[in-house]
Each structure stands twice: as C-alpha cells, then as structure tokens.
Image 1 (cartoon, rainbow, N blue to C red):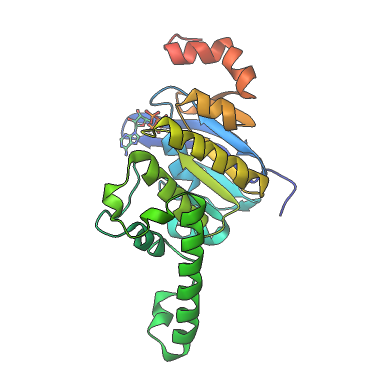
Image 2: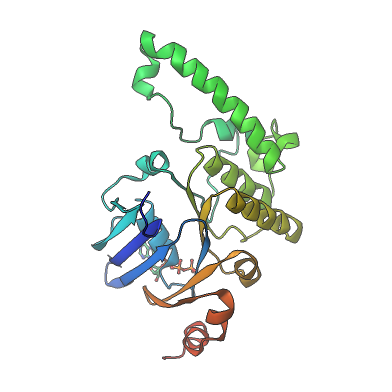
Length: 256
Ligand SMILES: Nc1ncnc2c1ncn2[C@@H]1O[C@H](COP(=O)(O)OP(=O)(O)OP(=O)(O)O)[C@@H](O)[C@H]1O
C-alpha cells in the first residue's frame, strides 16, 4: 500500500476516429472514499472507466493502482489486483439462475488449466465449495437470496444491479468502480443500494461511481470530479461542485 491515491489516471487521452473521448484527463480516487465521476452526456466518463479497468487502451497517459502502473494490464487481470467493476447495462446470463450467475463470475482461483490436472483437482473442489458458500452469503447480503434459484433474466433492473454488485464483491476487491448503479433502479432498491455501499465503505471498500442521479451522488460521494469534453473540469465535495459556475455551464452546454 502506498501513501498516494488508490487509483490515479494521468493525462489520459483516447480518440475514437476523429472524436476525442478523453483529452488529457487526470484525476485520483482516494482509499476509503466514494468518489463520484459526473458530467454531461459524452463527457468521457464511461470511456475513462473502461480505460481504468483495462477494457479500452488509452492512446496516451497512464493508470496507477496503489502506485503500480497498470496501464497495459488486461481487463481480466484487474480482479486479482483488487479492483472490480459493474456495468451500466448488466451483463447477466439470463438463462442461468441468480446463484449460477454468481458462480460464473471471474475468480481468484486455481487456473482452468490446472482444473484438468490431477494435482489441481482437490484444490479446485475446495475452492468451488468455498465460492458457493461465499456466493450464498453475498446473495443474502444484497437481498437476493430468496431469488437464488430463479432465472436471472426475470430480475428487475434494480435487482440486476444488485446481482452485479454481488458479483463484484465475490472477489473481495479493495476498489469497486460502479457504472451508473442508479440507472433503471426503482426508488426502494436505490435506497437499498445506498445503504449497501455505505456499509461496504465502512468496512474499508473504496468506490468510484459514474452516475447521473444527483441524489445518489449527493448521498454517497465524499468527493466528486466533474468531467467535460474528455477532461476533469472541477473537483470538490458535491456541495462545492454543485455551486460552481463552470459546472452549471458544462451541464447547460454553455462555453465557460
Ligand atoms: N466505442 C466507441 N466508438 C466511437 N465513439 C465512442 C465509443 N465510445 C464512446 N464514444 C464517444 O466518446 C464520447 C464519450 O463517450 P462516453 O460514453 O465515455 O461519455 P459519458 O460521459 O460516459 O456519456 P454518458 O453520460 O452519456 O454515458 C462520446 O461522444 C461517445 O459517443
């Protein structure tokens, strides 16, 4: 563990054809905090999240996790480093049950090549059984245990987001990046989501949160980075950035 930020992006740029989705973006997420990433549509928030988690390769700049340069690390290696994420559109396997969806989440277990080996088999079974126990406990924690045997395709938008969060938690990450956890979630489950994130934060999990729902941002975020046109525009508490003229102008599409 370093004394610096938990996650840092430095001068990240990413173009899609002629469009600069990220244009020299630098910002940090501190350990023990919920950090919001907000900004108008097209500001580059999701692209930044994808760069932070190895899903999109930046054209320029770097990403550091616990002080280690992870810019070139592939997406599937991030869970082992202690970073998990959820998605705007939850990628659940609708024909599998809620429980099965958790079991097919990426794990920190013995590799698949070893599964086939005689020597790895015993260890693999032990891990499978531990994973199943953990998955049950997590379903209980996110309030989906009674739906464990239901096909996940039948879940509501909010329940799918909770399943996605449970999937991220399975790996006991230090940092979870949430892409619009409030989108398509009915108010009662939104309250549940807020309660859970606060509880996890109290247990030491850090969060990065891309969100348009300002109620959720205000309730959860210790610090907020406002993005516009591929860059960090302003940072501060939610109260501070809400009052900032540049932020209001960015949302209204007025040149600062
Ligand atoms: N794969 C892609 N190919 C082409 N253009 C892309 C791609 N991904 C993002 N973009 C463009 O990059 C810009 C930034 O998109 P991004 O989704 O990162 O913004 P955002 O701030 O997350 O927006 P929103 O709040 O609407 O989700 C947008 O103009 C978008 O159309």
